[in-house]
Each structure stands twice: as C-alpha cells, then as structure tokens.
Length: 425
Image (cartoon, rainbow, N blue to C red; front, side, top):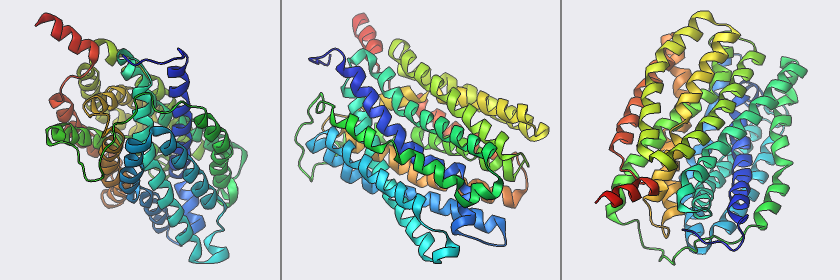
C-alpha cells in the first residue's frame, strides 16, 4: 500500500495530473474538430478534398514526434521524477498551441503558414508523448493499490473531458458564427481557450509532492527486461485498437458534414455526446476493474462493442438525421470506453516502476503514431475510393477484433483479484 502523509494527497495528485493531461489533450484533439476550417486557412484549394487532406496530414504530423517525446520526457520522469516532466510537457504544449492559433493563414504569409503550423504540431506531439507516461505513472503511484484502476481511468477520462469541452466549444461557436466566420477565426478562438488555462494548470502541478514512489535510478543504457515483452506487445495492440476507435469518433464531426451532409451543429453535438458518455463509461470501467479484475472489464464490453458497430452504422447512414447520428455515437462510445481504464491499469501494473513512465509512454505512443496518426487520413481515403459510408464500420470492426484477442491473452493483474487467487492456493 502506498503511504502518504496527507490523506488528501492522492485525490489532489490525481486531479492535478488529470487537469493538466486534459488540457493538453483539449488542445491536441480540438484541431480534429475543426479540420475542415483549418484546411481552408492553411491549405486553400479549389478541391475541398485536397484542402481537407492537407489539414488531416498536419493533424497526423503531431503523432510523428510522440515516440521521441515518450523516450526523452518519459526517461527523464523515470530518472528525476514525474513532477518536472509533467511541468515541462505542459509548458511546451501551451507554447505550441499558441503559435498555431496565432499564425496567419496562407493568404497572408504564403508557404510560411503551413510550415509554422506543422512545426507547432510536431512540438505538441513531442510534449504529449512524454505527458502520457509521466502522468499515468503519477496517477498509479499516488493511490493505494486497491484504487489503481479507478485512478488510472482518469488518464482516459481526462481525454474524454477534453473532447467533451472541445466539442462543446465547437458546438457553441457553430451556433454563434457563420460558416465563413468559423473558417476566418472561430477555430482560433477554440484553440486559444485552452491556452488561457495553461498557467493555472502549471501552478497546480507545482503544488504536487514529488512522485510518491521515488523512481529507482536507472542507467541510460538499461532497457526493459525481456520478460516484459509480452506486456509490451499486447499493450501496443490494445492501445492501437482503442486509438483507431478514438480517432474515428473524433472524425465524426467531419464524417457527419462531409459524408452524411449533416449540419456542423448536429455533427459537433454528436462529438459532445460521445465524449461525455465516454467519460462516465471509462471511469465506471476503472472502478469495476478494481473489484472484479482487469480482464472481465476489458473483454466483455469490447466484444459487445464489436457486435454493435455494424447495426449502429447502418442506423446512422440510413436515417441520416440528428437522432440516429447522435444516438449511434452515444451507444458506441459508451460501450467502447468501458475497457480502457482496466487496459491502462493492466499495462502499468505489469511494468517495474524504474521503467514505468518511459515504457508506458512508448507502449502508448508508438501505436498512436502508427495507427492513430493515419486513421483520419485512411478513413477519408477509404470513403473517397469506395463511396460507401459503411466502410468506416467494417474498418472499425476489424481492428477492434484484433484488440479483443490481445485483451483475452493479457494476464490478470488487479491486486484484489490476485489476492483472492493467492488465498485459495
């Protein structure tokens, strides 16, 4: 059991890590909600498809630097503590998003505009790559063993909060502004709102005690022991499946407008709804995994999600109205989010603390870079080539099935479950 001098410290530590992590993800994923408008600003073209692909490629650029950030900032967190790593990543993210939001468009400064935006996006990815490992490790180490799942679920929960707030901001702006105003400056307002809270988040993180479990010194040349390779491989597969699902859900604002012909208001309302329900689902899953084990919470909801994908997409692509679009998003988001508090806990519990921040960051960042960074480009291309809105459903079902196999092969790691097994031996 972790021992803390102040009984309030675990709650304060988890909330501080959550706030900072959520703010970083807000800035990172809000870009996706305004991909159409950003594409028109920095990649103007007479062909809307070309403009959108330029914007989505810039979105994907933010993933390229995430493994580097995971290695450098994650290693720093393992050697010198979680707190300085989290402070650095928060500061870098705030600076990068401010640069992106304030950069003039292509019509004003020409090719310099997309170049600056891509560089800012790379800095964002570097910061977020390191943030995930240090924040997740902090969340785990700040609480008693029997609350790890509930605590680490806030890693995914903070992302859902970020997505919910980002979609709410986008929805409000879409109601208040015309389509042209959204392109001219509306998306800039959405991004800058995140930077206004960065100083507050840094101040909160400065009040945190240093890592509750002080990391053991590790030589620069030491690598994760070979016996943990199973966790690394299965963890990357599970994160990869969840990443594709996440970025497909974040693409739904673009999908609703471009593919189904729905209004920006309805499309962003669906984003708001699926992120909101996803928050409660992932927190519920983390809480349950502390009580009944990680594997049941991972396997059964993910199996249900796979079975629901095709019916839900048939509903929304056939009806093409607000009820079906929002309803299908809510159902799929709720069911797919339940396993991931347990997933994060299972991966973190299987890695020694001396390697935890860097290893978790890499397990998370590599599949996110390879799969998440290309998901929206892939989906846009598939929809263009096939002309079939249902192609998204089949793609999502296939990758989720692979993720389910990895969950089945993962070993149980919940302390409560293992204690019960040990008691019967």
